[in-house]
Image (cartoon, rainbow over the protein chains, first blue to last red):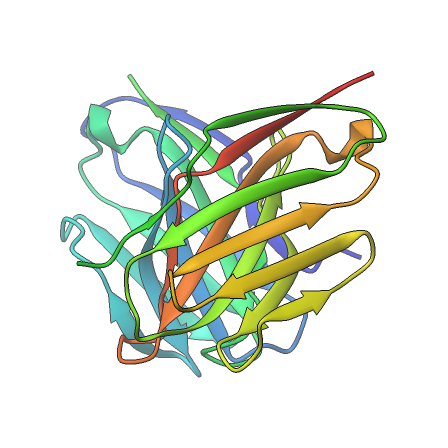
Length: 112
Length: 113
């Protein structure tokens, strides 16, 4: 059974388009996250939600907007995509705010 | 500032040998540390964690050591296997931050047959 799932796994799109990445966890966790991993493998937190409330909002362009319809889902919407947005985006979840995080398989976004 | 770094970007070991991956952190307010393993094309996978009130924690074939005096964290893998080949990340949680994990830059472990 998949604990943290993301769709799509690959996303290729052109500059200027708007796209969404979906994330679902079936672990019953209260906290969910979005990370960006660049080409050098560096992982950086973007957003975190706890019980559907935004608790972490790092310095990311406001073209990125997370949406949490319920505790099990955290989607990431990106407007006006730019070349520099190309990366692998990981969703994660944890039971609480200071617990091990379980990561999804990642979504490789390529902007052309 | 907040930073977590690794001494060796790539570590090559012989199958069956022990591996030691090191990590330095700079924030003395960090109170929780995690090691993750990331295989090619996959998401990071939890290996082991340790809280700041401990110096050592053991799992299956893995041991994490925490030296708060010099702000150093290490992951020891016993009897390294080909399946251990991956990128390993340490991450720290800073007590006064908004509950975010700060990840290090990663060390690639290559296991020679």
